Length: 608
Image 1 (cartoon, rainbow, N blue to C red):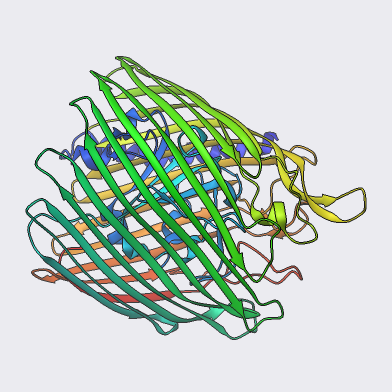
Image 2: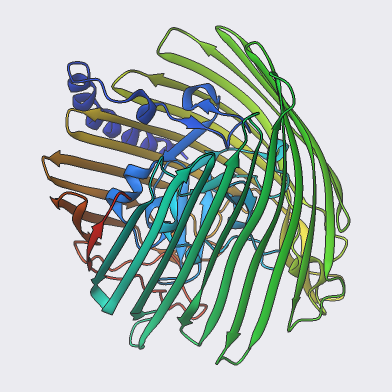
């Protein structure tokens, strides 16, 4: 144990040495936009708050970051962010798991414009099927959010926001590119506004021959066609109505077969300012996760559809706010597997108080969920913040959350366990943030205790089935920072995590315990240059910690050129050092291979 703490201390010291010259230079540089360094965040508190006001550990992936890095997959930009780990079974659309603060991928909630997207059968979200060019920004909130979002927000919430409408217009844009492994991409869109109506439309197609999933095998391809439509209208009295539809559809080849997939969210909302202090919003939405697997020894079809009605009210009392409402959702599953139960509903009520007694802030939340399948759960949160001065904020919080058993856990034919209870957790966190005009830093330490973890274990009859058998303790430290220095943009993150199975003392499988990420970009007139360096230590592919997967370091490089008004070109070089690495293995010990060096060139017209 001393070794773990010693390594963490060395990492923190190294981070400090890197950040020191940034700090010194930032004190004498031009002031950047305060919004870039202290952006508004809505995921953490259900209401707009600047990053330092959320009393949470939060990372924002803004539009400039996504456009500069121009990733081919969402997991590329998530890997190595504070408290975030990614495990993938290959590259280009292959199955990926996102671990927030060492919790399972099923315990990280994914939202798209406020709509939950997940598989009710498998549990986790299909992160690997989302095209990053469909999104304008992202928010990563780490720590339990059960009192705001209900089930599965144990490790935190990632919310992606689709492209907003621009003023005036119409403003068209188009981008085309190609690269390694016979990869091709074409995307286009149109945004604008007329009168009180705002609109945004976009489409994208990506296809690649891919790379082998395991050594000595053939390339396995992937294609994805995505479309987005958003329309909203604001009336003279301030009322607003809007619709959203996002759909991704494609084909993914893996080692023993292939799958056709659909990922979709759609919603309609109405927002009404009842009084100057009271705003009421009703949202009706549907999310779909469909997977048809064929050309394999075990063909299957799994379709999940979740329909949700959410009523949320925000009341302002001077500097204080109250957010309260109700939510009703229904999960439906269908396909080639006949579950004993094919639907379940969940009813919930929630409330959250955001109180500002400057220099002290208090945030408290409570939610009650009543689920038809596994009973009721009460989750809560309490956070206390103290502004030491105009630049430094101390925070402390405690929150509870739970992970719901999936349809597979409860009703899989022959081995499902309908008596399962949800996994439950309690997390205590302490943090401090330094927020300045030119730069910021954030330090957080936490401990999460998980009980009734769902795991497969032998029953009295000798048959294996999911049961509430395990407990885990996850401790961690996160240090992150960023700065805008003249024409430089710098971001850094260092994460130490100790996800321990309390019964065996072993690390939870497929989690790295240490990681670092550094992003540096420089504007040079019409040119821009940048790079990202992601380093992670080893992980284990088995619960016994005998099957060790080595650590790795990845270097990604990028360059951009605005060669004419509204015209630009961008070149990215992923895994520039051609590092061979893996984050998961087959059951026979073969690595799931990740892609080697990959270059990608694109040309774009219009504002993106």
